[in-house]
Amino acid sequence: MTQNLFGNWNYPTKIIFGAGTITRLPESCRKLGMSKPLLITDEGLAASSIVSTAMATDKNIGLFSGVKGNPTGKNVEDGVRAYHDGGYDGVIAFGGGSGIDAAKAIALMVGQDRPLWDFEDVGDNWTRVNVEAMAPVVAVPTTAGTGSEVGRASVITNEDTHEKKIIFHASMLPAIVIADPELTVGLPPHLTAATGVDAFVHCFEAFCAPGYHPMAEGIALEGMRLIKEFLPRAYKDGTDIEARSHMLVASSMGATAFQKGLGSVHALAHPLGAVYDKHHGLLNAIILPYVMLRNRAAIEERMMLLARVLNLSGNGFDAVFSWVLALRQTLAIPETLASIGIPLDRAAEIAQMAFRDPSAGGNPVSLTVEEYGFLFQNAVKGNLEGIKFAA
Image 1 (cartoon, rainbow, N blue to C red):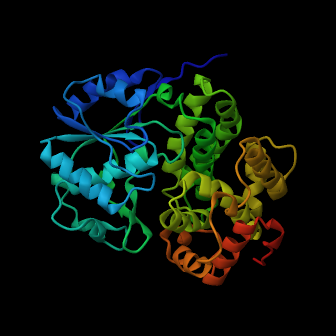
Image 2 (cartoon, rainbow, N blue to C red; image 1 turned 90 degrees about the vertical axis):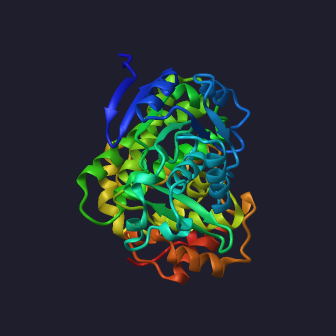
């Protein structure tokens, strides 16, 4: 039976979901007191029909598209300047993870008198934020990957240090999300694949992270089930609106679940994205099996449940691992970091950065700098057989 794929949810924020709901953008802006919003997106989407469609809903919407695929501190500074120069009174965060992350950071920074890096997610830095001066945000995701539309943080690259920093405040969570699966229909297969596996990794690492959080784990499990069923369909036929709808929900579920934590896949992907400017979801998709093998002893029991939820033919870790490898092959995900132009010459530096990354704290096993270096080297070479560690 075909489901009615529409909904108005308040979890974890207000979400207007369904095909064609982009028409509710002006109404949503008005509800947040915006009369002249600035639509912020990445440079790749600026000339797209979906941006034109969104802007056509209200003649007062302005556009800022100076955002890289891995947004930088300068992108945020430029966006703040554009916001003030144009006299805008709110932000429409539009796009994939890069556009939405940058937009949330810009909305934060338009009213602050401290530099961006003073709000890095370390200690009680979040208490420095002048919440009253933040701009309101409506988020409109156009990919099913990062789930940044329901996140309370932005990942921004510090170009001086070549490090990705997590900028956090609870009020960075967009007040309204318009989740229109029709906006994702034009996403090409390779980006559908990379963003879809990104959503899976969010769910997977959240499910495996240590600590007690049954709500996050339940969301993560259902997110992974949806991705298993619908990502191959969305990849094969981008116009499959049912598959696109379920993937858009699964993406938001991943970001909701990873409040519990992430892990070493992200700890490696963050510095690689910052240093080599590669797509975050693609990095996660390539790295995932290597980290799974390293974590095997610590996640065996959880994999028994996951294999059942995914209705796999085998049991436990081996079944899940085999399915992940098969999914990557179905989606034409490369097997090595070398195949996307990442060499070994900065292995020691990458290992140090991964060890320091905040996501490392959520890994089921605490890894040393040397172990991160070993994982990285094997992922560059494509040597899965080399990942054999004790618990």
